[in-house]
Image 1 (cartoon, rainbow, N blue to C red):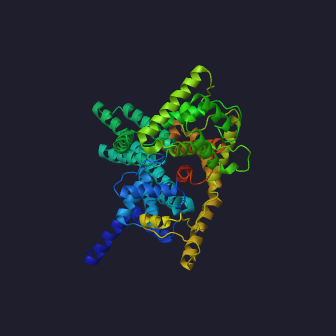
Image 2: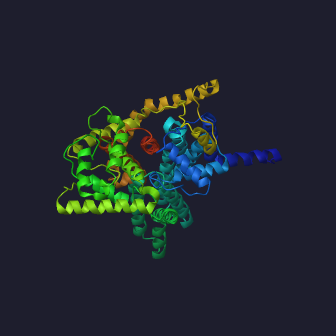
Image 3: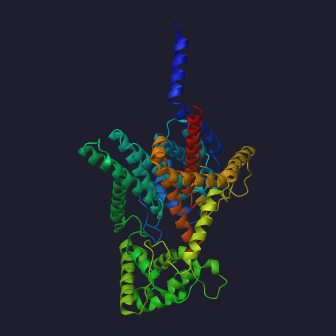
Length: 568
């Protein structure tokens, strides 16, 4: 039989489509999603000087070659990666409503290819990708239309976890494959670490994968000793890249401000001072306020440095205690206390430069230590992070309840919606700056919503409704499957026959990471401020979706194989 030229071309096309069908599938649905979200008006909160506007100001300074701008109480408090992302986005002239969904889609692709070796066929990868791609968190108000750093968290969670799983699953493949995945994981880890101050929640997954991968490499008898060493080194590349990024950013900050740190909330004399202030045992228990006014009064007596800014601090505490404006003595929640302190110190003139401010906090820390040693102050235990409120006696009962509430909130996709929130201006054309840097129009008060946009909003909220409808039941089923799989991995014959171990390890890592993040948010909610919200939990949603789909598909695959074996 002789093939014509046309027949040969068709055959080649079929082969090409068959070979790259997963990629073609991915690109096709990415384009569909992009059409649903592109050019949606953004929510620009120009008046949020400590949040959204701070990100825009940092990006504007970077664009103008001024690093993070003139030093103030708002400098070196929030990570620089999101402003850096905005700079790249501005340079490429990509609309924000295209770049955020676009980079999330890339994260979905990285995750799916990262776990590819878990399955014998590509079929489950299509399902997992589709479930992740239309994750409602990727087009919600607070994690898409709001120009803020939480819009990157879901993407970063996917890139880190997917790449780390690939490092493990490809541990016995060619070294260059493992290196590429390790670099991907390292870049994702560095980006998350320098986006949010609470990025530590992903560290257990990273360290766990590194340890398990390293052990399995060492125990592999067929590998030469030198290959074991090389592959073991490759597994720690993500941590090495994180350390390298930290050194680079700290060095640049030192050259600009004279202080060697990436973030003053995690490592500085301010960190030491705020932890010691939290360490002062309070005479009264006030919900979410670990440092009541009575404690501040005691601190004034032992810290001449803090007492020197008493007038500014009292005024600042009044401003930041807005939520208790009707109370006789207005207290400040833990989530806002550090801002009140920094604002007061700035108003007293200590933020002329970073060195002067750092010395101020150094003196406060030394005076508090002396107060503890002399017995004038009573010390109480604090948490490892300066961002976490001290533990209280009642938290042992409250935390498990809050954790379950948080998990339930996530799996049910509560509160997530896509709408047109009107932007808030600062009276200084702040919205225009948002639009300029984001390369995207903002939603302006009073503007009509076009019919086409209304249709897209309805479709997106319809998708959210589907996830909300099945999310809880899918999670319960997946948990039951995970429990069954936990039992089955102890049966060597079944474990090896159905390839359960790698799948169980991936599911364990996903579930544990969700619980670590949810636990941190739950603790913040009971101790510092209202925190159970989807923007703080953004990283949990893609992981829980992946957990559900992988678990349910795997048990289906096992059951089909068992039934087939019986009927054969």
